[in-house]
Amino acid sequence: MAAELREQDYGVDAPGGGRLVNPGGSGHALLVCEHASNHVPAEFDGLGLDAAARASHIAWDPGALGVAERLSDALDAQLLASRVSRLVYDCNRPPQAPDAIPARSEIHDIPGNAGLDAATRQDRIDRFYRPFEARLAALVAARPAPPVLITVHSFTPVYKGKSRSVELGILHDSDARLANAILDRAADFTGLAVERNAPYGPADGVTHTLLRHAVENGLMNVMLEIRSDLIADPGAQADMAAMLARLLGAAMAALDVPPRTEATA
Image 1 (spheres, one colour):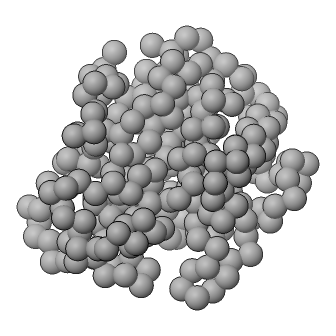
Image 2 (image 1 turned 135 degrees about the horizontal axis):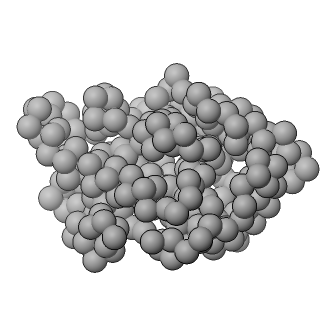
């Protein structure tokens, strides 16, 4: 197996390659949680932020990992979860994106990201983005059958002072096959306010992982955006994951995706 897949290469002191959950999962889905962690390595001195800011949505997607881990169980799916805050490097952004290493997020300045020179930015890219990108690419390549790529995120109920009515966003880029199948069936599984490409969409630059690892490889894919107040505790995360597993299962079945692959390599 490719070296990128060896879990021992990605300990807590080397967070770039992410954490692989359920490595032996035989489900057809491959889950990704790019904003799973608010961890800022000690060398960055908290990026100049206080503890409250580092615990807030600007640093990660609260609740997303809890949902993704439970989806991994329900779908018997491998899950790759980031181990580093998106303020250190946002693994759902390409290196050329200004917000890959944001100097400002929402209303917050990020002092530790201000005025970075090219060499410092490249060091972040090499240490945090490239290992995560390589590991996800290796997971896709190692599959005996093409996986269905599903990324899991959360969003704030209020953004820049405006309330958001959407509760579950079903996001896609140029390949809408899975998104369409989910949206067609959502009302059968949930009473949540479900919308296409909301509260973000491709124009906001949020579909990088889908484009890089799914669209480029012809894989069915979708990005799930869950309003964070709906998954604020473990019980709510479990309930959301159970509903999503049923909805995703029905959507994939409608697209003739079998529930299991052969044993993964």
